[in-house]
Amino acid sequence: MNGEFIPVSIKKKDGLFSENSSVISAQNMDSLKAFVYKSVVDMAESIYDGNIEALPLVNGSDMPCTFCDFGDICGNGDGSVCRGTDLEKQTEADRILGKEKSKDKGKGKSK
Image (cartoon, one colour):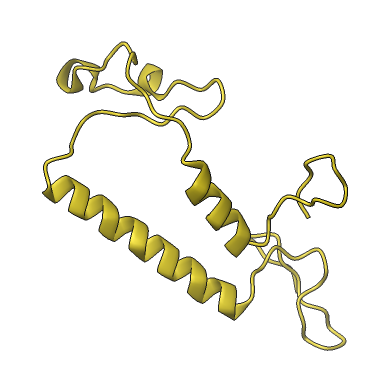
């Protein structure tokens, strides 16, 4: 059986996920839920504390302000104030999802 929306397949022989399936363990799913919950709570508390500045996330060369219709409202329409990826949070998310950088290969590829 193959997934229609996600890359997953179940082996007919034993009913387990195939090696090519993109899944995480139940334990990692619990960790991911806790990570997302904490992130949402942190964001809500930040908004409640009045931190509502427009700080779009720049990922690579993509500038989100070029796609946004609210530049005149936020005061950052030219995208002069932006933020980058929080590497600590990205590393934690990658660890939970099993995407740690391999130190053995030395080429920076994911496992």
